[in-house]
Amino acid sequence: MPSSPIRKLVPFAEAAVQRGLKVYHLNIGQPDIETPQIMLDAVRKSDFKILEYGHSAGNESYRKKLVKYYQSVGIAVDYQQIVITTGGSEAILFGFMACLDYGDEVLIPEPFYANYHGFAAEAGVNVVTVTSTIENGFALPPVSELEKKLTPRTKAIVICNPNNPTGYVYSKEEMEQLGELVKKHQLYLFCDEAYREFNYEGEMPMSSLNLLGVDAHVIMVDTISKRYSACGGRIGALVTRNKALIEAVMKFAQARLCPPGFAQMAGEAALDLPADYFDQTKAEYKARRDLIVRRLNEMDGVYCPKPSGAFYAIAQLPIDDADKFCQWLLSSFSYKNATVMLAPGSGFYATSGLGKNQVRFAYVLNVQDISAAMDCLQEALKVYAAL
Image 1: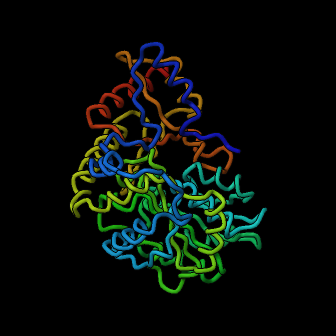
Image 2: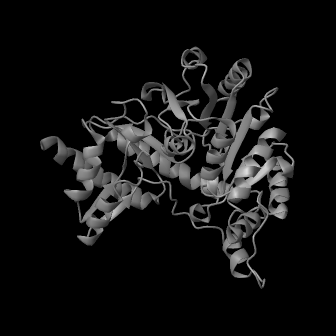
């Protein structure tokens, strides 16, 4: 089981706080945007005598309300094609266990969300990668490169759109190429759409569920965590039009009984937010993105492509080992009684040796804190170079 590059440095951050330092957390996608009041009130004002088990697929009222949300963003599904899960994480794990046998392979463009590796390990599945590069902003590698990696054990392709950790947004053409590829080779396509609303350069990204002729192949993964800044709610969804797959997933859903009850109330309430709810949130994230990318590219020896979506960016730093550098930031460095916590890039790659001089930034703090964190990092790079 691989360790999380996002969380493995937590003990060093805790020790830094105990020494009296302020730690700017740019390592994890935990936004400082307030969770909508309507969600919190739904839990606070709930009135029942027994907190009972719910339906294994999730509360029917919530699933039916989700159907209307998906319709509002151009996705047509039925509530019986939705299984509510304990976070998007459980949706991916259930999908892996339902679609793949022990020793099968999933093909994932790297760098990728590190926990995909963990889910694959739990399901007994092997991860095979095709590498995207920082030079072109981590665009999808050519389909011919993906096809070269296919073997008789390959059963699925996994993507995140908009992407975590790179912030890249796959174009309609790239999505359609993936649709043709999974149809040609009879594969599943897992698409993590947790950051659907957060695209800063154009329209909402094309959903995998809107690809033509591949209904039986597509598993869409969703979550309230990022959309509504409700990461601790642990409510996600697996959505597919493949009836046999839903039946298989339901066996795993029944084995864990039901998803969290209070959090489903919060998730259902969120669907009553006004249509313009995301306008202000997107504007705030765009300002944060523009600031952090500008500040990084102004530093000597640093390169950071501008991401189009989500709230992450990967930067290349003038260092030889990001794991050591990120640990050093927490254990041995401070500037104005503060330091920065980052996620080492190597943890987002499966190929050994890649990402050694890269780090992922989660621009989830307000612009004042991001500015102070960049001051801190700029000074740290100067000190580290001298060492």
